[in-house]
Length: 121
Image (cartoon, rainbow, N blue to C red; front, side, top):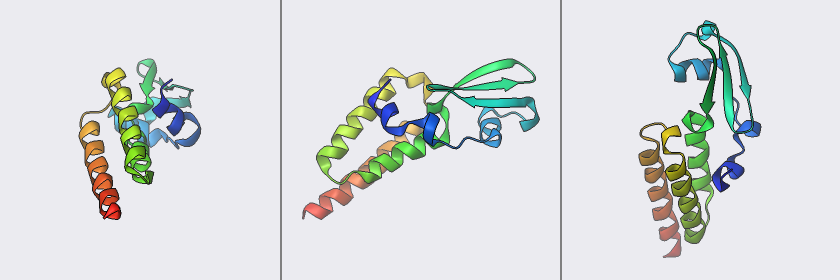
C-alpha cells in the first residue's frame, strides 16, 4: 500500500453510491446488484457480466480527496513531500488513474504553491 493510499483511506472514508459506480462505468444502475468496498479495490457485482473490480483511483472521490490533501498543506516543504508521494503513486498505478487527473492535480498544486509563496512575502 502506498503512502498516499494510507493517507486517504478510501475504503473507510469514501461514500460511494451505486449511482456513482454506474456513472463511472457508463451503465444503467439496474445492472448493478451490489457494491462492496474492499481494502484496496471496489468489487461490483453486475447482472450482465458478473463481478468486476474497480480501483479507488478511478473515482472522482479519489481526485477530490487528493486535491483536498494538497490544499491542506500549510508549508512549501509539506506540499513538496505530498507532491512526491502523488507522483510516486501515479507512476506506480498509472493505468488506474483517469485521464486528466494528473493535470487537474497539477493545477491545484500550482495554486497552493502560489498561495504559500504569497504568505512568505
